[in-house]
Image (cartoon, helix red, strand yellow):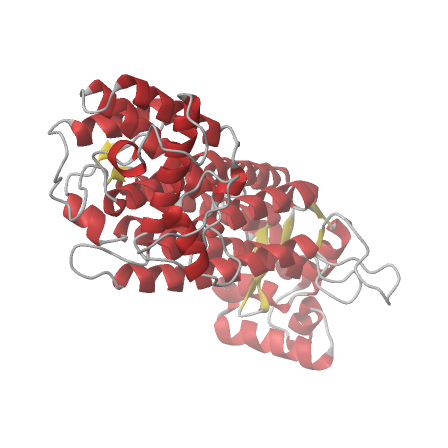
Length: 455
């Protein structure tokens, strides 16, 4: 392809430079998590290649040392490529190969820009193809992001809400369905629904992880394992598992591992479910906290910052708003991930950089969003007991308790008359003559209408 100028101070080489010049598209760069996962993959491959006698120990040790530098946060400016590149991620694989080869050459005493002592293809990429390296790095990055960042924050928020559900288990309030008044429940019961939502999301995400833990490495170009040692695939997966303390295994079918993004599609579906749940929770919180005088106002949430540049004293549910926005983004990401996953052809899916970009962004948004929502909103949620009591006592739906005593039709007549004439339920019932005051007081007791499960 002819010569190309590469900056003398850079560790990357010609293939990276060509990608930089040919794909000047937008500003999205390959995610840091993916870069780290590529370094982890190259590190494991070098270790196994040395152990199998396929790579001289001196070169392998230098490659591992160079990869460790990348993992330690060194050389961040050496990975400049956009996600909008070849759909197999080949250019980012070669970016890592070139950087590690040149740095390993320096470690062995070579001079940057001179003849390499370690070759990017023959040594760093030994027993590999971009077609199995990049899918492997995608799964490594995804597993680490979910297990080390997302799930801990999800558990913390779940525990916070569980504590609130227990603390508010005896506060009886009016329920709402179709945005209309309904029968009573406790505030603890209402919040326990949120807790159960998060518990189910934990299970759904956890169930998606075994497929994500399957690694394509060892499949090379099309899944056949061409140019690899018979023991390579199993050993390199074990090396990655041991080093990262994550449950990685070699994929039982490399053709599926290279030809699809199914594991990420399914796992992102679980992220979409969490986003759906978080949007419902955040919306419930901000509606219940609406006011302070002209809204529902049953909850108080922390006052974190001024809410308006023109209206003094206004406090807005900003944490809820941030969560609902990021949930919208995750739901949109899911569409892109699904289309990318569905669009693979024959032996290789070529939408991989976009898929992993969206997946990791969704994990970051949800993890950071839950952490912020928990710290700056959920832990400070408190009930407005007077407002809760006021709305409970004004609700016409308490009449439902009379159904079993005087029948649905008479109970409905009491409610309609009370609403039309501005009466209390008791006054309406007495005026219609359907029951006595003592009967009303005995039968219409909100605290007896919440069932036996008050927490």
